[in-house]
Amino acid sequence: MGDGLTIECIDGVSASRPVLLGFARACDLHRLSYADVLDEETGRGYQRRFNSQHSLDFRRYIQRPTGTTIPLTFNLRPEAAASWTVVRSDCGRAVVEIAAGASRVMTQVDCQHRLGHLDDLDVTLPFMAFVGLDEREEMEIFSVINGKAKGLSASLLDFHDGRLAADLAGDRPELFIALHLNNEAGSPWHRQLDLGGASTSGMSRKASLRTIQKAVKRFLARSRILQSESVETAARIVLDYWSAIAAVLQPAWTKPRKHLVTKGIGVYALMDVAADLWLERREGAPVDKRFFTQKLNDFAAEIDWGSGGDFAGLGGEVGAKAAAAHIRAVRRRLTLKAVANG
Image (cartoon, rainbow, N blue to C red; front, side, top):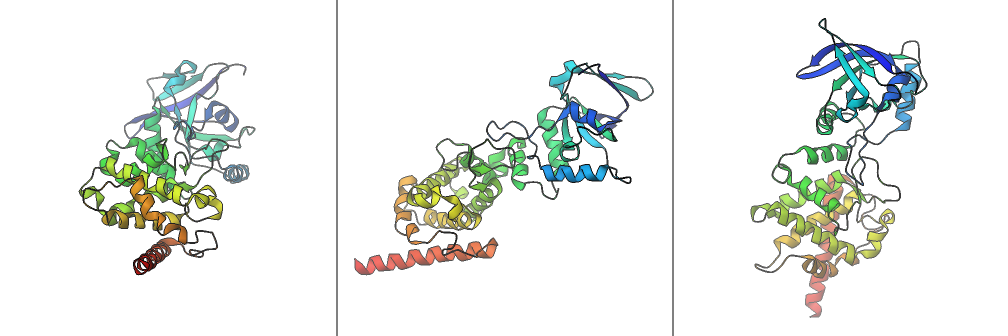
């Protein structure tokens, strides 16, 4: 990589955090930094997946005569400290010295898409760099900065909340249960939820973390299960319910693109029905996969779950209510028929 790089900066603070303010060529900033994108396989990282078109749009803009930007935000990661040194002076100045051959010494806290396609440009850009934040601190700052960002995956922010929360089960039980469905090896949703990061090649996605979380919240509100059971027990019951769904509706479950079982409308409606089944339980009887399988087997397969079937054209909160009402109507009809034939 040739000689090292020296960047003159202003030494200061952003609220309580030490930061460096400076200017550097886009190509140098690109070479020296990286986006710590969430790897959904390992759970490491926190950034959104890269959007090439978004980055190319900024590349075109920044090369215009009037192009400009607010400072790019980085962090000099402590694990790369052997490759960088900050030399401070008494006059509020500092120099960042990057060792020869070093690369990827900074993480892109808030500039991934602005910098992504600028590896060959000499244009000068302003930057602010935190000094020595760990990954958790970075993630918290990223979430605060981008919490209302247009186009940022709500599921990614939810995943951040799950990692940052001191008491996730107590503070956000719906998110605790949704993450349990995604993380538990025996779950039919195991690693099937889109978390907003970079997924492993070949992995299929059935729904987003946000969709499952909202559906679980509906279940918790209707069933009032947490009035009598722990969050951990509720998570086990929800997992057993979806295991029963995957078994009873096996053809639809294995072909999610052609069926609505795992789409928002199906997930919301089925979680409403899960609340019905919980409220109908007999005192002292186990509520497990066997219980749900027997109940669902009486009516679930009688519904056309295809994309052009019973729920075609339904969407949103109103659509979810209509889908749940249809499932209940089918169930009542089949129950009355069974009673009449009995």
